[in-house]
Length: 329
Image (tube, rainbow, N blue to C red; front, side):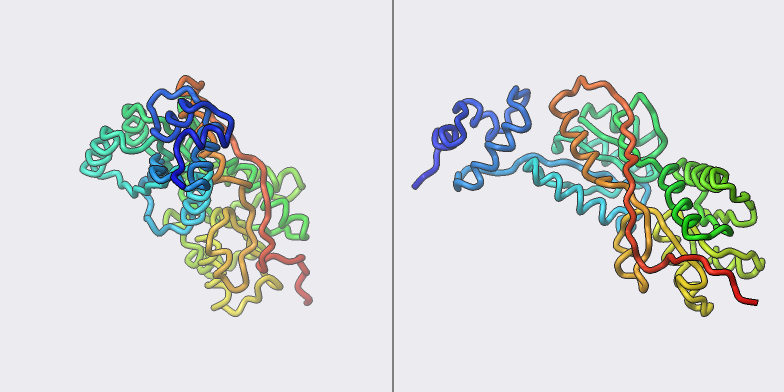
């Protein structure tokens, strides 16, 4: 039996015009996203032959390596959420080279994507380029700007919660393995780290704060050992640093977590491939929220620009944290 638009309309109890608008992806359509989703879902289930999920959403990873483990899980969650809206994901890895900016500008001018999510190491050039395109967008991460559509995890709170977790396990000599303070995320992580220590009456020892532009936890652990800096636990600002630190400590014969505890920030594949699995704090639904915000903006392109902060935290209870026990003399 051939399924017609009329059949879909009767099946859902909507008008034929609404079905046509949804299936044809008519520009400026007044039907709601919810109604459109129901129509597309019914078309798929009923076997409508001319049904094609046509919308594409671009994800631009800027100034980061395409295989960066911090973004692999994010991409998976974004793609999963986009399927709810019957959209496909188009991934683009763009550097700050002028030629790549030119290529991106030409691509955006072709209007092949309905919306864009941008993440990575943002600068004014990419932001201006995206805004000039006229395509609905959401910037995920970066430095907060109230004149942009942004969704930002609360990095300060994540650091605070991670350090608080270690303090409640009895740790007092807690190190911070951080990246370059030129990046906002690392400044906020330092603030959250210091605030947690102060709130719980733990002295802030600057020797325990290790900063490295290369974000190399392996090297930071070696530096702590060479300088004979004592610590019982570490908060790492990402799981890349945490994974590297774990490898160095294991090579040094340090028992994890019996002798030293490690907690990281972010939910990445490194958590699961590590032995033991990494303990980490992460933001709930961090990749889902920018998608839903983008869909709202697509429906209402006059929506006020604002920053949405993601502050609901969860913990992955891996095997790199334990109660602190004082060394026996």
